[in-house]
Structures are given as structure tokens and as C-alpha cells.
Length: 123
Image 1 (cartoon, helix red, strand yellow):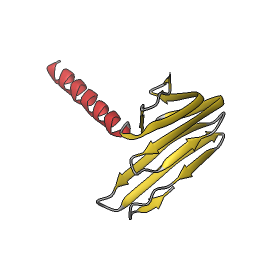
Image 2: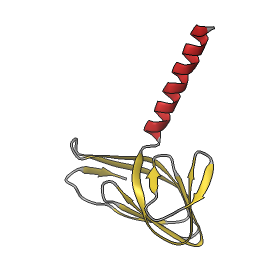
Image 3: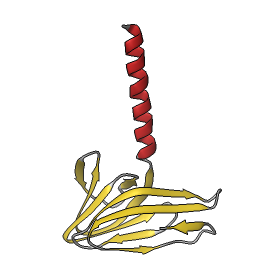
Image 4: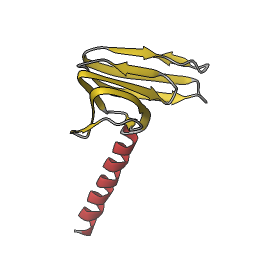
């Protein structure tokens, strides 16, 4: 019985650690116009200026609605009216010369401004 509890506890710790790695903070909400929401873990919250954006977050805007996100590498993504996207991957490691973004646009439009840091950028 004690061995089963230990295994269950170990599994829980591994799942929580994996979730923390997956949900790494990668950016911040810089501005909002109209309606905008952040989806995380199956729940939606109204976006707020200064709110953290994590890997795996979903962002959606209403009509009217616009959302500007600044990522850790100083790149900017502006999400237009009636849009929905997922931040699948965001890697910035200037020590290794890597900046990589994978954003899945489910609906609508986005505009991006990619910063230069002497690293290779992939969008």
C-alpha cells in the first residue's frame, strides 16, 4: 500500500513539473482594445494589460477587439478583431543564439514585428 502511494505521489510530481515546463511564461499583454481573452487550462479570463502569456495559452479577440503581445525577445504580435490563436512554442535563448516561435492561427489575422538580437529567428 505504501509503495502504491509513493508511486502515485511520484507520478503527480512528474505531471506537475511537466506542466510547469509546458506553461512557461513567454510574453506579456502590452495593450488591449475592445474584447480580448486568455485561455489557459480550459478556462477563459479577460485579458489585462501586464498579464503573463504562457506557452500553450489561447488568445481570442471579440469584435471589436485587438490584443498586442510583447514576447521575451522583444518581438510583438498584434491580434486583430475576431481572431483566435494558440501559442504553441516560444523559445528565446540569446546565449545559444536561438529564437523560435510557433503560433497556430485558428481564425482571424495577426501582425508580427520580429526583433533582432543577433540570433536566428524562426516563425
